[in-house]
Length: 117
Image (cartoon, rainbow, N blue to C red; front, side, top):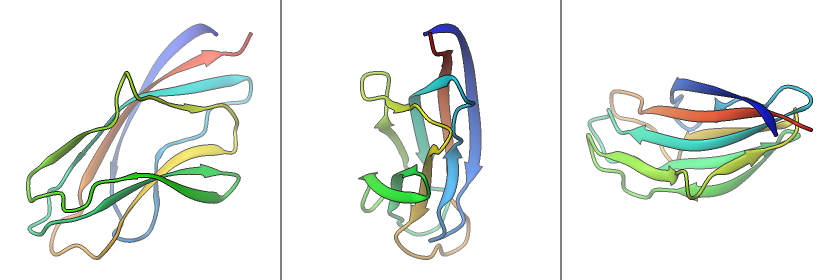
């Protein structure tokens, strides 16, 4: 890969509906997701679910059961456990296993895009 370009996105959850937290890379580019942090801003315990979307099919890759009120989930994706998106049909989504009580949690994702050789 060449021409590395950093990127990031802050996303608010939409309850049990999947929301895109990392969009697909542009054609000819590979997106390497190096960090994902989720903070439970709700007044109740939540269970966030991370899925990889490939061509419209969601596959669960990680979840954190019982994320406490005010607690962060910092190790879903790390520099040592990164996720690779190689096609314009691949993205990462998150949803909750159940409804929130008051406030939707927030996710922040960080990545690098590299132009394919």
